[in-house]
Image 1 (cartoon, rainbow, N blue to C red):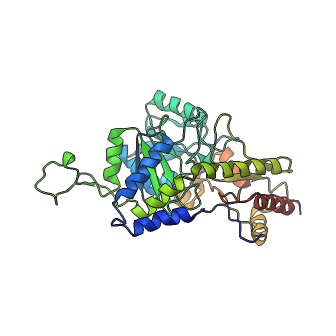
Image 2: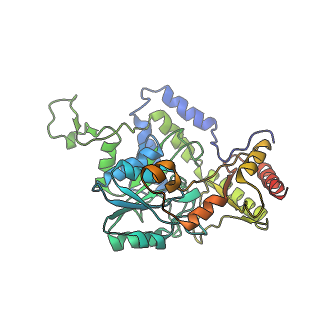
Length: 385
């Protein structure tokens, strides 16, 4: 192969560069019109009433959780198979994360496990659409309504995916808010960036304040208005703004979302057909009815049965120019959680088994069929050595 094939990477074309250049030559590098255009495009794609762009996906999770104004000591339920930010956002707000085990087929949070963990302290559920496959949100919405809970969808992997009802992820039909991430390995990128979508005007107005120090200059919201210089800090917020430069890139990237989804799904299908009969290998399964814009291709390999270590396999693949990664270490196993916070005794058997076997292999929007064939061939060769 002529280039190193990482597990994920961005695709930037001339249109993206032109969009960024236009902003660089404009009067506004930040706090200008490009952010609003990006937010409008997100609403068009997701069907949500509002979108609030922020500096990264973690910031999006943080302001989403803050906007709920939950009482300290409340509990929130999420999956252990995710990046730490999905539960860290609870810790930031004085909410205790509770980890529910995953479903063995989708690797997403198991709705039946959520139900088992609900207590009088439970206030919010944060389902994560792992690898871009939507969680079974109809079931989670039933739980939300039954127990009067909030739901924040962590769709950091899932821009461009569709639920089983054929509606786009991010429309907040099943939740109070949906969070996206636009890191370069994600389906579309703003370099660093994130967003929250919602259909609630009340939540939207809180999000706008929270992303910019809690400060407003909106005359309609001021307690007084002595002059054009005047502003008010109305709540404790953060500097989580997204610049116009990043937003312009994001808007340009969103115009290519359908094409990116088609490429990702084509490679996903090719990998599944290539690995379906490979001994001690389990291919990912897409739930019936959904259409996932796959951010990751998660191959489960029984390394013990093959008498191989994952470390050795990853190192050999790297020598062949193939980059891989593990998504993810169960959050409760991370030292801060297991040792500092006392999560060491927690066990989620399905998550543990998944972690022992999972390996993310290359999947990105300008990956060619030749490159996918090479990846499949070399992985099978290394596993069979």
